[in-house]
Length: 77
Image 1 (cartoon, helix red, strand yellow):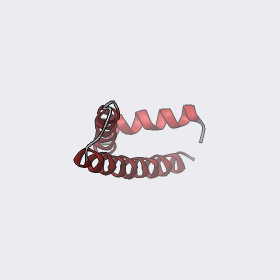
Image 2: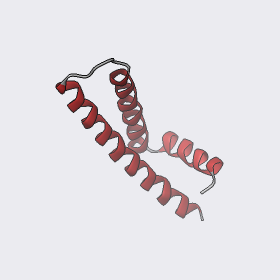
Image 3: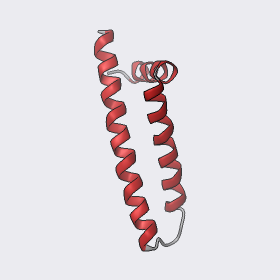
Image 4: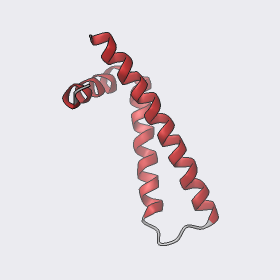
């Protein structure tokens, strides 16, 4: 899958699929929260647990989004 094509498919899904748009928004939100945690000098146990939870959620969303992108790309072929 070419990068340009991938970007086009992603843009199409964001504009046409509420499910994909929500996943993209949640992924971005998790990323922002992770950046805030990573900016801290030291994480307490609660913050470490939250960092771990956010990383898992973000990865799960990325996998789901990649699956949707793959299905959309295959339908275009």
